[in-house]
Image 1 (cartoon, rainbow, N blue to C red):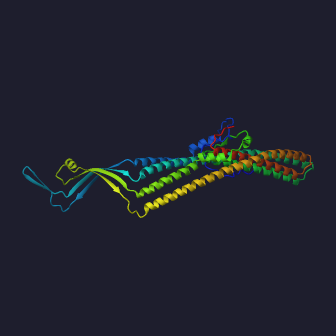
Image 2 (image 1 turned 90 degrees about the vertical axis):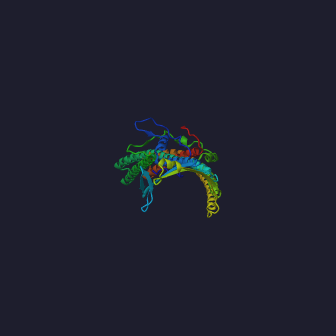
Image 3 (image 1 turned 120 degrees about the horizontal axis):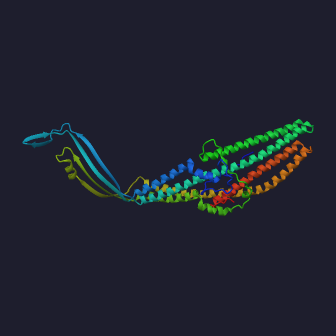
Length: 456
């Protein structure tokens, strides 16, 4: 049994995917995972999403830092040094009790202490524009986190539907195998009474073996999809992963298909990748303003206080600290005159970045429409296919039942029986594929429109 091949790459989406097609079964000892369970668990544990959330936190720290840059900066400094003058021959002379004492210090100590403050009063609004730019970057990081989260959700939904499809496909294959086993058993009886050749019996046995292989293959594919889903959920362990299987999905495949234009208009409002592109254009405008600030003068205020001491002085440490105390304040202005074309180049590149951002938005909008249009066309096609398949399956089932009866009576040969069985199996496979493709595309259209989905 071939697996269900999804024709579209799953696009990033904006909100959680509460797909209506997955409902709870009666609770057993082992947990049965619904799609909502899978998404909720992945949003808490997926490593890729956690990494993206760290980037969002980093962007928030950049905003805080740029706001703090508006305040004055204050720094303290001290320096302690030792000096040596080997040829020093004059020093300090003191008189104590009528006795003259001369002291020559070849090793001496210096100490300096200071506090310095600076404040950028104006720099062409570069600092305020940097704050706004970092705030936009933080919003874009949040939107990127939503895109990552929705990409994970859509991948989970894809695998979940594949699991549902393969679960039902296994049942079809098992039913086909059961029929082949009955045909083989009947063939053996007919060989014993001389109504069938051993060559025809060999064909029945080959058909039974082929159906056994199909069951094994479909179970292997189901296990692979479950493994991939567990990996997205960051689940480990050898416990079997069970999903909640709905009792019926035919009505979901035949429900009304949303309007293409309405879905697109809603998606333009809600999709995070579109909003992210719009913010990129705003960011490019701020980058142009910041680049233009390179041509403007900047005004800074500075102030400082300091003092120093020296062991060669006859004054005490405290006296030196007081007498050497110094305070200063000043204003400085920097006017760019010639910067080797740096400002002009920065402005030109910022404008090119703005053009690129506008083109990116147009490209995202075009891709969004193409994706939605693809879902809409596939929903229409597969819904029609499924309606046709329902009739075809019923007709082929009746035809095969009649062939079986005629075969057992010896009225039909082995070739006719196997041909009928192949037609029935093909109809069932086509029905399953068109049904789940219709469900997926309808649900994705509703999801892109931002609708809250019910379980009905």
